[in-house]
Length: 377
Image 1 (cartoon, rainbow, N blue to C red):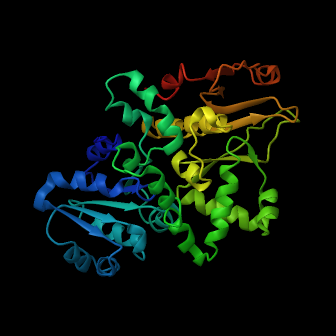
Image 2 (tube, helix red, strand yellow):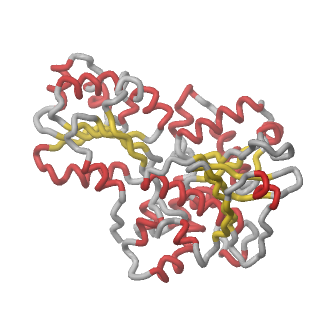
Image 3 (cartoon, rainbow, N blue to C red):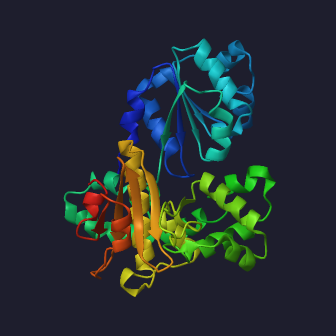
């Protein structure tokens, strides 16, 4: 099953406008496949350069414009894959785009803390940036005949996630694939950064986080369990975010005194990876974490939708010391929009204190009957 990536058309629309195109994303999310598809339309005019190869890495480290152009060779569009491997890549790309505005360079990287630090400042005003996630439910919907097929595949997405090899059916042994992916390979970039030498701590940290999706995370509690410092935990979580393994959702707090305003919630970019970390692939009806899975699924899919639509909205959860709560809150257009996620048919009492305090706000329930609308399908 071939699934068209939604950002492909967007990227193609920005080609040959005198700017570098940067594509971020986790490992194995399909960046190389995507750029090679784009490159394929240009035949001999295109060239793919893999910076995991030492010769290519070194060839791009010169700051002589003629040497850089000679290294690229003939052609007009060049893919620089794993660009974070190249020292001073941002400066060198600036040299190329300023000196040779008629060529197109597309740079990809799996670690945003590395690639962005090397690229953002030198390329200010000279780049278009795109984020490639695991396959979205919206992208998958384009290969289904009807809406019912999306619902039928929902359990698979909650259990096995949506990495391309999973979503397309290429991975014959889905659990084996995810276990390999969720080993050190997925967060290799985080381990390499600053020479981190405790992969076992990162695995244990991720396992603890995996067991708490949908709940607030205490860095102090994690530090005690892992026998380390709070600062170390915060550092590792930051690196795992930048490696596109997890993302944080902060609490919303503005006026009400007893609102919780310190602990974050942490979710995974892919539920298959989350489940592999704790070796949990039981069927939905046998699980006691379905609420957390559903919450994580809706949040990451909403995040993908917002990226696609270019919706710039602040994202939070809301809870008080009295345990009134809203799973998810978006702040835009001068109003708060709350969403409560329900897998089952349990009732939900809308928090009166939230409505009273934040005038003109609204709260909706998202369940299996209306989630496709919430996700723009």
